[in-house]
Length: 116
Image (cartoon, rainbow, N blue to C red; front, side):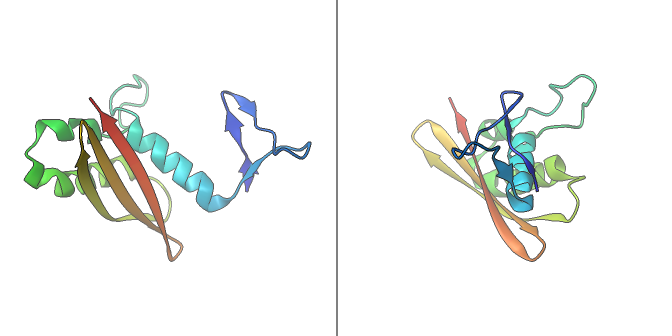
C-alpha cells in the first residue's frame, strides 16, 4: 500500500487524511502510465512507454495482435504481470484499447483511448 500522489502532491481522502493506493490500484496506475506514454519520449529512459499510438498506421485487422504486442513490450519489467489479451475498438475518431493483465491470480483491466 502506498500514498496517492497527484500533480506531485499527496491527495486528500476527504476525511482529513491522505488517500492510499492498494497494490492492485498502484499496479494499474503504473500500467496505465506505461501504456499511455509514447515509447522513446523520455531521453534517459528510451525503453519506457508504448507504441500503442502507432496503431492508427496499421490495418484494422492487425490491431488486436499489435495492441497485445505493444502492451507486452511496454509492461516488461513490471513484476508478476502478464498481458492476457488486448482488444481494439473504433468509436468514431477514437480507438479504444482494452488490455487485460494477470497479476497474483487476478485479472486487471486497463483501458487506453487514442484520439484524433
